[in-house]
Length: 340
Image (cartoon, rainbow, N blue to C red; front, side):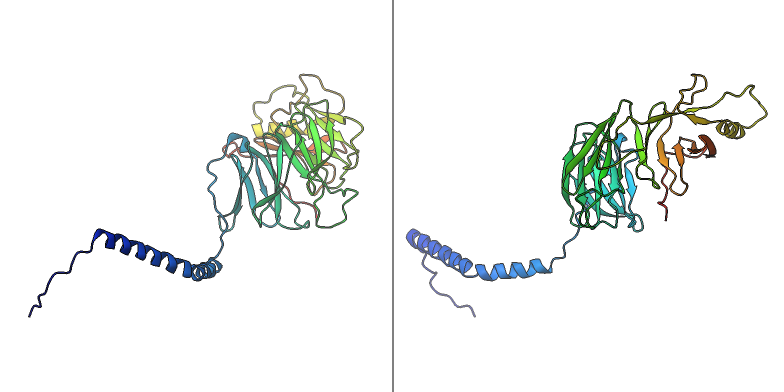
């Protein structure tokens, strides 16, 4: 059974406006009264949200990122990708951190020694900027720059500076700036200790792991040695030059394999302070890396695309060569473990 009645009277315009106004005020008052409750609710929800490390895909690497990789003592890998520095876990292949602060292509990265405090690394770019990163917090601690020349290499020194009073402070950092400048940095305070400008073009360098006062620089035509290196004072000289010479084989033997000919040629290599004749000189322009041997004293490794040359500095002669198969990929970098 339907119930009928008079239709409700339509409210006037004034009644509608008053009703709307009254309703808005009620809503505003309810919102204000419940504001504290909402804030408390949001705060409790924020505490329940688990914070995660931001993951950024750096993309493909730049040509100048070649060789910009370092495997840390804790097992993590840091590498440069364009203007960013990526940190990955090689076991799980998961990105750990990605740093974005460089204004130029990242050229070199190096992990800080594990015995000096938290998880940190230093990256350097094509404009000479060095940044000390804290991997745990994802922040930059120190930013320094000497000039706008690319960084060709970095190495931590084992020498202690005079004002180092805490074991958590980093040792001085040696950085090679193109084309011939060596700068020693105190990355704890962002201070340059000294700067040495050499007369020869320098391509790379390494510190003797058995004697921290000895440095070896790779030059286009020779190897430059420094025997009085110290973080407290600038070296007094421009170093000693050693040239590599190889006497030409008298007659080519077509019956000898190329690998055997290479071994015979390498046995004749000599190192001396006298610049050899042009026909006997062995160019270092094809050398990709110079480094001290990490387990044998007075031995230097010269890395080429297809061979690794071992030189004994005591007898000034080549003592070995490690060739790779011609069908294999060319070598780009060699890395040895530290002694002990």
